[in-house]
Each structure stands twice: as C-alpha cells, then as structure tokens.
Length: 325
Image (cartoon, helix red, strand yellow):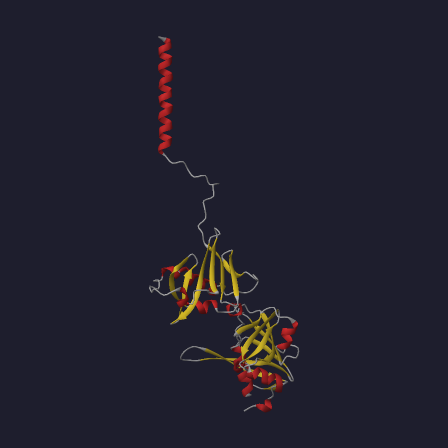
C-alpha cells in the first residue's frame, strides 16, 4: 500500500510539472536585448558620372559628404535631390516602344549613377540620349526596360564647386558698423562719429541716423559713402572658384597684388565685436565678378562686379568730403 501511495504521489508531481511546461510554452519568451536585429538597408554611397567627371558621396553620421574630401562644405541638398530622383526611376512608366537601345543612346552609355546600400547591394543606372527635358535610362541587369527621367542630366552635370555651401557673411548695417578700413592705392578709414535715433509718431518705428567721418572729415553727404555702405550691407559670395588653391592659382587670380583689402569691425547679435576681412583679387575673364578671399579661409570665391564697384573705387581713390554732392 505504501508503495502505491508513493507512486501515485510521484505521478501527480510529474503531471503538475508537465502542465507547468505547457503553460510556459503558451507565452512567447521575451526577446534577448543583447541580440542585434538586422538593420534596414539604407543608401550610404552615391556615385555619379557625366561621362567626364565622376563625383562620389558617402553618408556618414547622418550627413552626405564628398567622399574625395570629407572636409569640403557640401550642401547635401544636392545629394539628397539626386538620390530622390534615382530612387524614383522605376516608379516612372517605362518607355513602351520597340526601338533598340541604340535609338535611345544606350548602346554604349558613359553616364551613370550608382547607389550602394548599407548591406553592400548596388544598383547602377545608365543614361543615354536626352529628349524633351528628360534622359533615357535603364538599370544594369534590366536593359530591356527603358525610362525617360526628368532633371537627372542637370543633377549629374554640376561640378563639386556648384554644390558648395557658401559661407554666410554677417549682416552689416549702419547701426552695427564700428569701422570700415579700405586699403588699395588709397587708404580710407570710415567710422561713425554720431548716431541719432528718431521715432515715427504714427508707426512707432525707430530710425537711426549716422554721421560718418573719414580722414577727420564729415563724409556723410558723399554719394560714395552711401553707396559703399549699401554694398557692405549686401555682400555675398556668388560661387566658389577654387577650393584649397595652390599659390600659383591664387596668383593667377590676382592675390599676389590685390586690388583692395577691406576690414570691417561690427557688433554681432550678442553685442560683441566681430571682424570681417576681405581681399579682392582681379576681375574674372568675362568681367562678371571679382575673385575674393576671406581671412582665415584659403578658398577663392567670387562676388559680382556690380556689387563691389564702390568698394574698389574707394580703394583706388579714397573718400573725402570734397566729393560730396
């Protein structure tokens, strides 16, 4: 009898253990936080060639960089726009004619765009002839399907300098200018000697009137003074001419004998003093702009000729009260 009772107890314990195991299997086990899930593939490399120039871009820490010089200040909106165009190619309706690849200029194409994702998978699109603002394209490995893609040719036709994020110059106004020194054949120090603030009774707007002096003379009434201040307030770089130029390249752009150097002291938004120094080299060959460098930056930029006429005139002739009109 004792043996039967012991066996019955053991059997009951075994049934309870099996029931517990069954219940555990009914509930999914929590995921191991140490197990890394497979990352979603995202584009990380972008290469484009217009047949003569090849540009390479890479995605690093969430930003697109020029792979050949990652210090280059790339405006990544260009890379993003190109990527968007490429990723949308196969959502376009394919060209549905029976023409041969040669008819689309795709028999031996030299222009291409390649996208590589984070898993190492690459896709390449080849570009052929242009038609009505679009270009014929096929994907390597699927040559039988041709697409007409708008904007793509212009996107891969830019030089890397066209994709530079140009430096933004400080906003210079009569209110925040502390002094302007223009050096060239003549030397001019322009500075404010008096500031008066008036308030419009109707609008409540305040107007600051500044009296300017150069060489101890009041030059406020000089037309060139007003023009010079207007040009300083609108200074902007229009393009990059040469990034990290050699000394020879800088000399060819006139920086061995610059036409003018302008040093501007101003108050920034926080009320502290800032300094901007610009050096003007020679005029470009088509006479649309002057080569310009900014202190602390070896890059050669360009400013439109019409926007710096007075700066260069003051560098050449100075600024006196006798010129007042």
